[in-house]
Image (cartoon, rainbow, N blue to C red; front, side):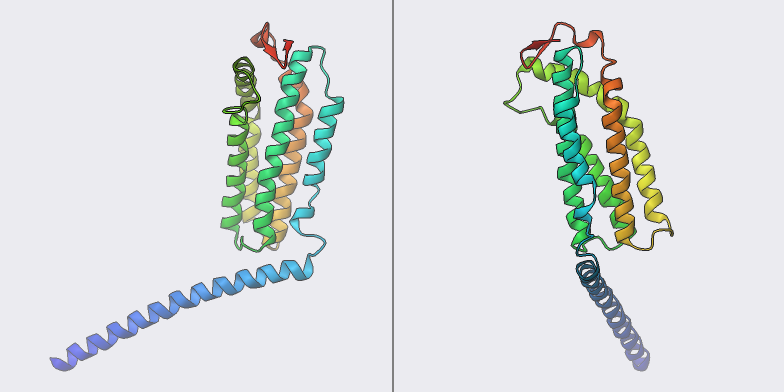
Length: 224
């Protein structure tokens, strides 16, 4: 009887010890992988880290194009649409840089994390775009009302694109075609770049479809 009790105690101690070793080993292995991942980026990709992705230069180029070449017959609409597009580019850049830093520092080590962080980035872009003009002393109440109307349409037109981006990110993350997190991340950013350009070049057509919604309202001192 006593021997059986001792035997059971020994089995329990061995089981607990094994579990502790397994957990500690997994944690140490993950830390080691993160360190190796980070060192690999520094050693191999000094000139090709994600912060050098063309999306960031393209954002600045798009902003300059909007400021200089985006014109409409209705100058009130022009002012509204320019305001939205430039803010969209700025918001896109802020959140893309945050994701970029996580990848370049080796903090994202598996496809689940890359998918989660990429979709999180997209959701933050959408949320900030919906509210960039709220609680902002730069806009009068009438201008806020104008932006409410236009942003409602703008987000509706872009909703299909947003669903497509999420589906595309998932495809990239599970695909065996891209050999590692770094290459998957580059492809995710390529997708962001494509969609951003698509939104910008389609903006004139989509936003200009707002006809009677804004008539008589004023934005930046110009009657729409």
